[in-house]
Structures are given as structure tokens and as C-alpha cells.
Image (tube, rainbow, N blue to C red; front, side, top):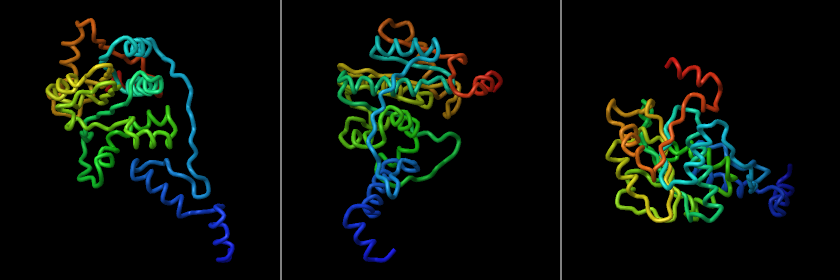
Amino acid sequence: MTKRIAKRRTRTGEFNAAHYQTEETKVRALFPGTNWSPETRDPMRDQRYVKNVKPRSEGQAVLMRAVDEHNLVLALGPAGTGKTYLAVAKAVEALEAGSVSRIVLSRPAVEAGESIGFLPGAMEEKLAPYLRPLYDALADRLSPKRLQAMMAEGLIEIAPIGYMRGRTLNNAFVVVDEAQNCTYVQLKMLLTRLGWNATMVVTGDPAQSDLLPGMSGLGIIADKLEPLEDIAVCRLAAEDIVRHPLVATMLTVL
């Protein structure tokens, strides 16, 4: 290809690698390690995902009804039971229906048995590896481009647990994921952030805490709150696992 033809194509917009490279840089800065990047010759397209989320087990049906009927829900269960996915799906549903004005995502920054060292960048970049499961669930309900725009507008907010003290979360749908890695004091602080016209869903698996033995507060708090009528504590079981069948089989012996 001659330089004259390359310049003509760039000028007419047929191929502008510099533009797409800039867009790719923005996306990768927000979502480190992601595959959500525009093709060199095909920019990212906005899509609208309208599929309805339906429960795939009785436990999931109970969880979805609990979110509709309560402002505070604790979802406890083994890996693969859809706790995080259903919580995020309900959050997006509430935001799109206008029931809340924002979604607040929170997850403890605890490494699963290994240290990743110092992470450079802004707060969103530092927390991105920890919040990746939440991003994946959001991307399944929203297109990547729309998700990026909503985060830029503040409709979807990242709220590190360490920065939640003193806040009052009004008119928000709050998702606290991997709560088994929160201490009793941290969870008590998080639960008392609930404001007017707000819903909070706390998810976690007490059997898979990355904290030292006895430090996780999820199981203790769930036991104390379960008798309260205004709070729903949903306990999912192995029969609610919707991942590969081997996951349920392994959890019976591990």
C-alpha cells in the first residue's frame, strides 16, 4: 500500500488506527486485562441485552423473590450457585426501571492466598482485578460500551470497603460480594450504610474465606439477622449450583 493510498483511507475514515488505538487505551485503562477492545478495523458497537434472568433452581427463585421483597438480603452458598450474578442482574433491573439512581459495587480486596503486590493507577484500576467478577456479570446485562459510559456518569460506582465508613447510601442498589472475606466489624459497618430507598445484597460463601480462621464475620452476622422478619437470609445449597456438574460433585468431598 502506498503512502498516498494510506493517507486517503485515513482521511476518509475508512481506516483510522490512531482513533481506535485511543479508544482501546481508554477501555483497557478502565478494565485491565480485559478482552473488551475494539477491532482495528471495527470499532466497539453499542448493544442492548434484553434477555430476562430466570431462576434455574428453587434456591435461586427464593433469592430473587427475597430481593424483590426486602431491602436487605444476605445470600450465602457454595461457589457456582449464581449469588453474584443474580444480585447484579437485579441491580441492573432496578436501575433501568428507575427504582434506584445508581448501583454501588463493593468487594474486599483480599488476595486468594497469593500476593499481587502494588498495583499502579487510579482507584478503579487498582480494584479492577478484585471486581472482575462483578464486571463480568454487569457486561452480561449491559454492553461493554454502555457499561463504560454508565461508570463514567457515576450510575455505577465502585466503593472500596475501606472508604464506606461514614457514608449513607440513599436511592442505591448496593452489592457486597465475597463478604466471607469481611470481618465482623467490616460487615457491621457496611450493613449500617443502608439509606432510604436502597437495597443491599450481601453475597458470600462462609466455607471459602481467605481470612485467618475465625476472622470472617459473615456466618455470625447471618445467624444473628436470620430471625428478623425485615431481613432475608437465603442459604443456597449444592443442588443450586449451575456451573459444571463436577463443581457440585467436588464440593461434596473438598
